[in-house]
Image 1 (tube, rainbow, N blue to C red):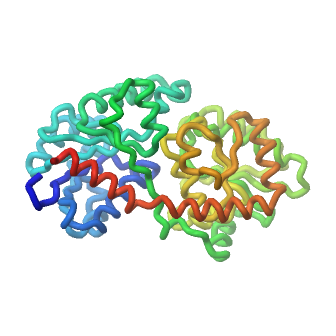
Image 2: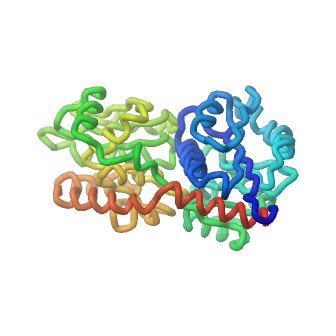
Image 3: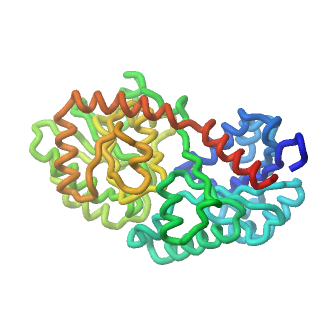
Length: 381
């Protein structure tokens, strides 16, 4: 890094999926906050998929945005380009640091590399991944820990697991908590709630919300079973709405088949981004009984929408939720008991909604971006 000049950093955003899930939220939030920091402190270049390049160009005034080759829209081709084309691009743009935001990085980048490792669940919860995915990401994480100048993680829990399980060097791992877009995720108006209820065909009996990928570690089957047991005897039972990507958990269909016919379970798939505050904020409870997370963005987004949250005390989730959420276990009977207690206790729900809303204010992308910049300055020095 030249004295008096900010480091030239190339961020590889080609790994952002079209569905803008967790990694997409992270990259978008980070880049938006870096743009606010400005070119006086960060000389930013971003390479993105062609479908994202124009949007990033509008969002990142003062940064150089490069459209990657069309082939990077396909994962195998992107991974090959990461090892060949990305190092060449880093050299062409004069990058002093290359940041890879999703586990993998070039083996020979020609400049120092930082990598975001989002979680260690491929090691702590291996049974929840198929063999191909588990093997790939385990190898990627080990390689990044060896090759990267520094590794960025979104929680102390993830840092501690990498140290415990992989003997990672603690002095080379930096924690940068994720943030939440408080403009997009906010306490919704009654109109926003009503619009979502109308689109989903929900009644005034209320509903329990889940938003996220249907991966095995999200524990959606036991959420379904727990909800069904919790509300089965209600005269007007609240529905369960499981929104988000379809994922690959075959046990979900088996759990759905067990649901009594008088209960209403909706699986609407992806919801419009603009509808998420109304969806989350309109729920009686947002329930997220995960087996473990690297951060827990869905519970933070629900908290920011002033929704009472029920989750598990696994890995990073207590770092995010603190005392502002309710906790259960992964077991369907315990989920049923704790969910029923919360649904019957409106004063407690209101208390949790306010506590969660207040705690969510502590997490923002500006703070996360500052932590990233500190890491890059350290690497470029």
